[in-house]
Amino acid sequence: VLRVLSPDLVRRLLNLSVRAFQVPKGESLNFPECTPGYGHTVPLSDGGKAFCIIYSVIGIPFTLLFLTAVVQRITVHVTRRPVLYFHIRWGFSKQVVAIVHAVLLGFVTVSCFFFIPAAVFSVLEDDWNFLESFYFCFISLSTIGLGDYVPGEGYNQKFRELYKIGITCYLLLGLIAMLVVLETFCELHELKKFRKMFYVKKDKDEDQVHIIEHDQLSFSSITDQAAGMKEDQKQNEPFVAT
Image (cartoon, rainbow, N blue to C red; front, side, top):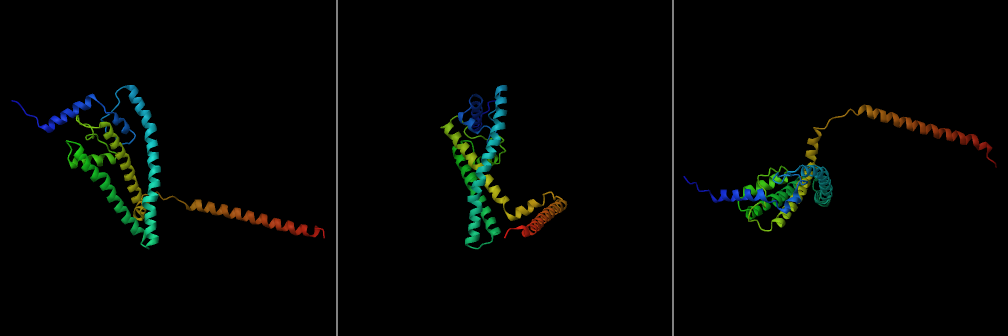
């Protein structure tokens, strides 16, 4: 009995065969310090594994420091200044403005880095629908990176290297945008109060007592020195030549 394979299954088998025999050059750009870690490109030799460990130990912290610095600068211009402007210029409540701004920023980020890229991937990837493309965007930008969907792996993919570079830029900008949104929501007054519920309360009474005693001791020593200097001046006044 002959079984006829569906065109979609044949296409997937061809993609798997292409992956087994070639590794696109552009894949080295997002390996592995962007932190999704798809798992479709892995070192096989002992030297490659050792280099991967060293490269990751250096590259991942550097990437996190870079992202943190960029996010802090962007947050000032994208979040804090607009909220402060509407609060001072129009007299709106700062908490209300911050909530509205966070919701709008989240909506814009989801639209620009999830829905629009998903529509683009569904067109560029032959065997991806919109849901699969959106799934790839979510898995990638959430740094899960399962590796079951990797763009640019088709056997008939045109401009593979340029396509991989574009995906790397998309992942980098998407991670920055996600971190900016998270930082914006974390600065909300309601979330700050919620986070304080998980803080460990420290016994500061004894520390404050020690600080007060030290301040009083310092103040008393200063006043004693000032009184001594005044007494010395009074004692020296009769001996001043006239």
